[in-house]
Amino acid sequence: MLSEVLDIWWIWIAAALALATLEVLVPGFVFLGFAIGAAAVGLMTLIGLTSMMSPAVLALLFSALSLVAWLLLRRVFALPGSSPKTFDSDIND
Image 1 (cartoon, one colour):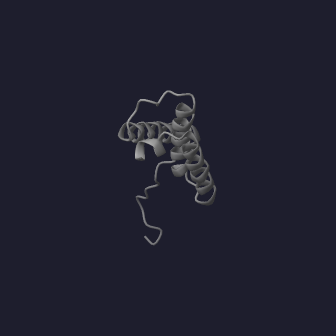
Image 2 (cartoon, helix red, strand yellow):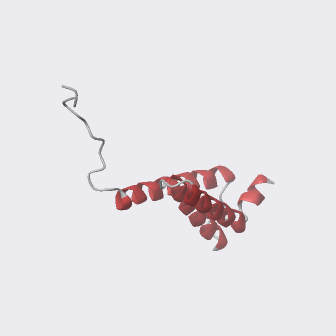
Image 3 (tube, one colour):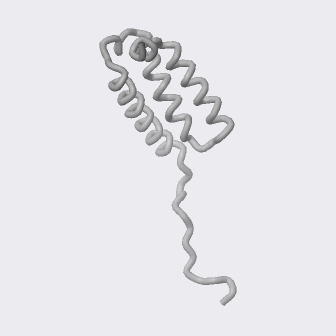
């Protein structure tokens, strides 16, 4: 039953749309990585690449693709010099 539900491509695409909508409401490129991962798995399921995969493998594939997407988004859209600021002196001194 669970494997049949996870093989339905439109559930993955709907999850991707929901996560992308959540990213608009809560910005930070966190949910966008998950949305890209869900969309990729949905498209792979649509064209039949994941037909013989178990639900655990699909979840692992989703996780790996989401992590790669998040790392790429962070690299591409990170602000230059976005490291935290440190102060050596106090303004009250």
